[in-house]
Image (cartoon, rainbow, N blue to C red; front, side, top):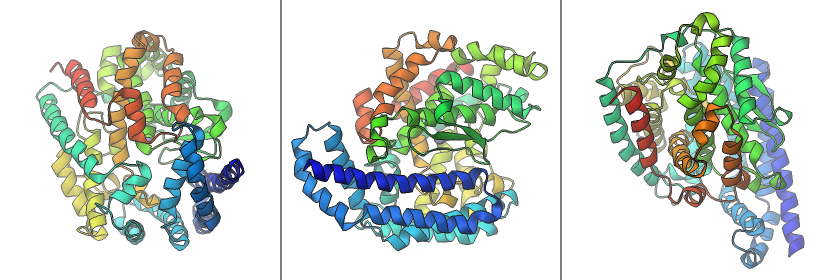
Length: 500
Ligand code: ZN
């Protein structure tokens, strides 16, 4: 039986190799590839994805999985062996339902849609993107169709990003959260506004880059196992635990996207760099879900990077870096400014108190597209109506509205939801960290993140995909995903800043 287990591991390793090779091509496409390379790149990526899918869903894998069920049952429940067979079985049962034609069509469609989206956003032209997005939505609806019967057409999509999570669970969490967040925003709006105008000045791009590098090096990002490049939409990717890359988007006249974006991506990267290297090339050697992934990026970006203790340490360095811009801005003004709460159009620049509303809006629209109650051609109008309803704003054009995010071009429908879940989970973890590392505040004030990273490594990163997200959260915090800690955090933090 051990022989069969080893054979399965070998096949899974080959599948991982093909997927990582495709990821290298995708990284190249989003950083250095010349614009006209998209046609050929589309074919190359489609071929690799099709081969990986065919290898994984082969009869041989099916037989091995079937034969290994009894072997798995004999192993301790939490052993790597039992867990690997469980995760592989789950993924196999899903993948085998998806025809390989669909896989290559989808891969090719998203490679083309990405270029179209880049152009559409730059030229504020939704019509340029429209046929591509229509194709993506059709493919995604077809995808959901492979999983009939489901409770909701959105379930199969969500499950790809957040294993085990149902649309209804998320809707329950969001409807409770929305009321509380809106109440907090109303409360904040009654108070004098803080200023963040100092963030909108000319900031040398290389100096912003260098400052970000200094911070994330201190966080523990390992440059021997990673690198950073520019891209229009920042992201993290990995080709194994020893090659985890991040990208940055730096603006010459606005400080926040560069430094907070860099901290955000480093949070994702620290997770990937921390997964048990013994699980490389195995399905367990991956993040367990995008929600958990986002909990890590948001933890470093917000709970650390937008906190007062962090800036007690790093603000003098930032002032040294940008003396003419920041010499006359004191620490408290800076801290309040970077946490200014104000409904805005752009999700990636949204403050912590409004961010989740951007996500709820996207989830509503995605569900309508999937259900067929909204046509893609009507999406810009629907976007603007929802923006008004959720945040009280109307974008001046589609580039600042429906075209702002890269996700739909890549076919990622269901993905946004995990961002809000990540916010909630990050604070659930943070409450545990505060209990288990009682002097965490002093450590952050000293710019020392060793114990924090060690805690995350031991409790979360190391396990990779061994536990499902809800299981992991419960294991670490004693509770499933819940919005209460996040609301406690928002009310405390913004209660102080806005003297509520
Ligand atoms: Zn992220």
